[in-house]
Length: 372
Image 1 (cartoon, rainbow, N blue to C red):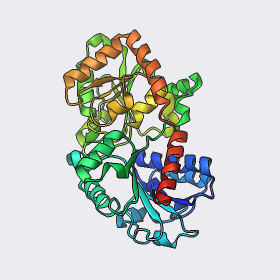
Image 2: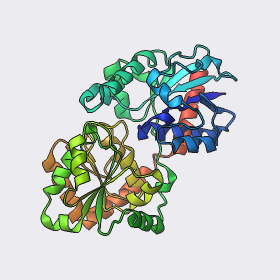
Image 3: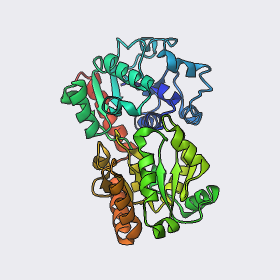
């Protein structure tokens, strides 16, 4: 069987979809072989994939291709021109022309553009809805990255439940095996001199960082003097005033900006806790990464986050600053609670492996190709 994965997601600024696409291709090739799993529009070998992923939105080996994101890939050959013809074409973006001679599949990452459109740019909302209108009805099968996402898709897009298979994405192995040297390197690089709570994510309304900071500033003085809140993530949109405050400096809160993925395991593992009060997630990768690294988690009791975290996290209402503050206070004040959640989290995170994701995805593609 031949599979082609749409790798144009590597052009995106969206870290989540880019991460998913990269590791899906990599783990499928490790399982099925490079000849069986190709990428569109050019068949990139793993070395090239590593390079594209590191380019942060600009692709060097596909000169000028970044412009095509805005034109829905109209300048690219249709997938039917691919040779050898794939049995399955897996889409990550809106294709100008869908394949007619290959089975089409796609991954549903989340439905926040339907549930919380105010937390996205109008362009993102339009793009997500066009994807749903054009790709979803034509797909022979769909993957959802959580049961929560599948339930949302069934309810909001009227997709029959049996047409969607839940396949959890994985956590990169380096989060399970962080060395003390990696933690020390991260602490030196970012000048972290005292214990810290960590937030990781794009600075945008859906991540709810403003409420987290408000809750942090409401903590008792003795906790704020012992710990600082570290914010790691690139600027997104819609949070101009918050970014100005972060850059100007907030007492007890430090903004690192974008952190390279190579630094994230050490930075995460060195934290006393991860605080991730997102308003909605299709999966919530930072939560799974922190659990893999043995770091206690405070996260939201909404969307997929309880599904991913299970009983290995403190769950709160993300819209309640009071609950956020109390959750932070519980975790920062109790070493016993942190130790318990650390052990439970590491065990729970093992269910989110890229090897398992690749195996289940390959079985899914084989069923689709066979008409099952």
